Image (cartoon, rainbow, N blue to C red; front, side, top):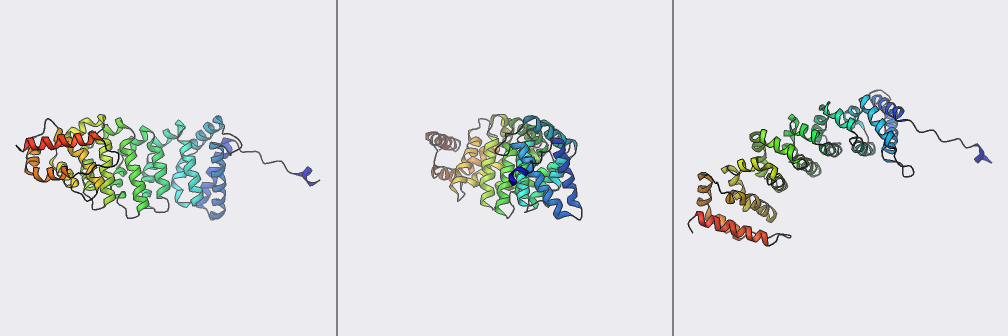
Length: 329
């Protein structure tokens, strides 16, 4: 008969109660009762995840999600999520990253980060911390989904750190930083276009080092990312300026001779724009003429990658003919 005396389940906390409990448990991480506080944090993060995403039996309530987001912003709990990330266990960080994604779907959370940009700076800097680098990368990519936050990161002082992070010796972290770097430069065309126009010299001085890196992964990925954003119609002004620069023509010519087939093909798709430009300045023409023999040999030996079609061969033939014409052949 003991089933008659089973206690009723504890009522679930309201959004305000949960936000308050989360804040108190995170603040308690600074006290002498760290271990107990960490247990509470993990329990509260799990409760937050269930309120935001459901628990498999009960679907999430939109009103509760909205109220929770408002309370979390009001109590500066988003800031605690970021600054206390290094103190959390792997499991707690995983659940928190999931919650971060859901919370950013609420306008109040995006606005909170816009008004507290030191949070994204902290996340960028934490690529230096091997323990939490991948969690921070995930959280940054969630931020980058929103144009205003992407613009803030691009224009922040911490953005330049990505040029260092993509060459970190730890492969997983360098690859994650490259993924974040790519999102920053390709997700929002208008934001990126405005950034490149206003920061052209500073940006390409740093980017040049990636294209000439001794690291194969860095060369390949930076070349691919460059092609992804430079050839977009929104970036026509930047591309026109880029293809007037001999230093970048020389880099593309060198990459056409790279030992990697993938790098050769990616380099061709940028190199062809230098050659096809109807308004080539004399300095560009002279470089093409002076190097025409090597260029023609590289182009004729250029492999066709899987997925390339007749258009690739047509473009290659046109570029070969243009170089021959310039050289009087």
